[in-house]
Length: 148
Length: 152
Picture (cartoon, one colour):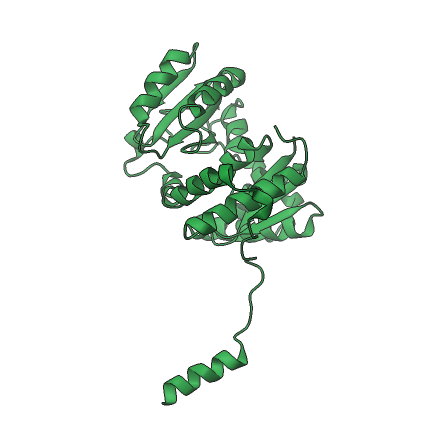
């Protein structure tokens, strides 16, 4: 069972397809859950405390806005932990604010730097592309081994 | 700053999203209540939110999937259901994160078709999708054709 980073990290489709084939999707929900379930100081809504931008310094320089560094505190450990990655390149809804947009760029950059199997896709726009999309993910995940 | 005491520690929350002509979220909820053993299940317009111990949630999700495997999709959620920081009842408007799910719901019929089709077809025989990183430049011949079409 491989740990597969999914981009967009909130993707329902990728999360489902990865777990359907017996692997573990690394999504933002897992990182958020960890913070939401940890006692500390109240910092709604996501329990991102002033400590997170400090942790984010591992992946982004000090002059990078704290919004990016704070987000990297969530995604950085998952990027290091991942053994494979599936990236959807035309996920426009992941744009969000500039913090999200720049973090997305940094996530993609770090994934491209990392020496792990990667699958680049676009969202399907018709039924045949849907078959190709699912088949590509199935082949990719089967190549990672230990399928259910 | 006030002290934060978390609730539902040690639990996992999962969305069970249904996009089916045969199974409704209400059907899923009834089945979920039937097979659950202490998990919290919330019925929503798109499916269910299931919260409980990891192994219990996994068992419920596996049980629910069997109702319509190609039309039921599951993903993790960070917050427990009804959390005031995320629930739209407290915030107004759609829950943050719903827009992404709403967008993907427009794509899910193609994924469903793919899952159904791959039961009949061999996945290795299906051609690979177009590589999104392979951005080709405009071919000179096509450009000339466009210019000619414009001039005539």
